[in-house]
Image (tube, rainbow over all chains, first blue to last red):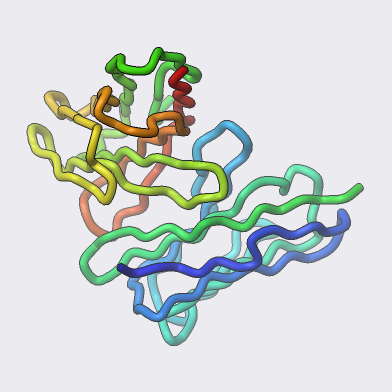
Length: 110
Length: 113
């Protein structure tokens, strides 16, 4: 079946640094979603992308829908301690099925 | 406040017992979903419902059952046939089926002893 490859699997950064993560697939998606999950909680939607090439920001977060429709990127600028968590990408394909990546676990060093 | 609630937050059961997890939403969403999350894994779809009185199996439906008698409610029963039921269970809903964004509840952590 379709899979999303999310990378990196985990990352350790210093507070204040910028963060980049991405999701790639061999398949085309019509919608890309980025979620953040904190320990013991459900994922919270951060950004939704609906068009190839679309670039959308939500505060310090910026996400892009890749031109090929097979990838998406999430950037976090000037990281702060509350950014810690697991970030999931999700793609919705032409059959309206949603596929989730396995997540990028973000750790922030003081 | 509008949202999705799941109860209880933590649930413990003995092996061989059935257990039902609650999911309620007041967002007036038509579609609801149940996912299972294991450590280091993505979300795996158990069951989904596009509309009241209708539901479909997801990727890992074996050992689970659901009902959708009301728009607001989509309870999940973990039966004794589920071989490895200990996991974090997430309920989600969306306005409609298709490319509509899914919103998640806070989750229920089930531990089978």
